[in-house]
Picture 1 (cartoon, one colour):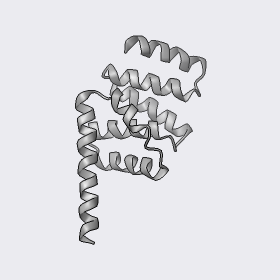
Picture 2 (tube, rainbow, N blue to C red):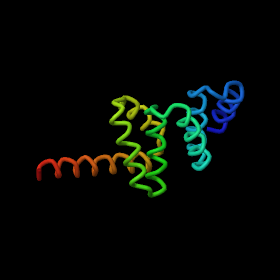
Picture 3 (spheres, rainbow, N blue to C red):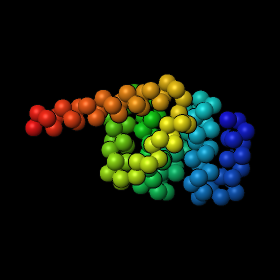
Picture 4 (tube, rainbow, N blue to C red):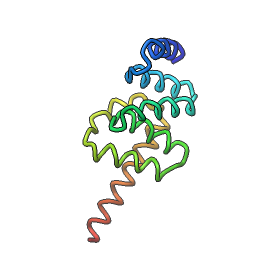
Length: 121
């Protein structure tokens, strides 16, 4: 992760608008345990393109990791509304095991809640 971070940082310096480099940099920061820095970088990338599912999903995980369930839910809802959920599986490979389980458990619980509410209606 440190080597990836150094390379991605150089790419961001060369082109600050390159979203792929920003995401790569944020992923490396996350892997190194520098979650707050990753969060700030993702917020910056999101400010340039608020409809990017890969960024929204990463931010959702960071919010869930901090215990901000409502914020995490809102970000996941936005991804679903956008309709681009194809990024979820590849991103899950980036997450650490504990965070992957957190995201899976959270999404599973929310899906069950939605189904239960629909059955009651």
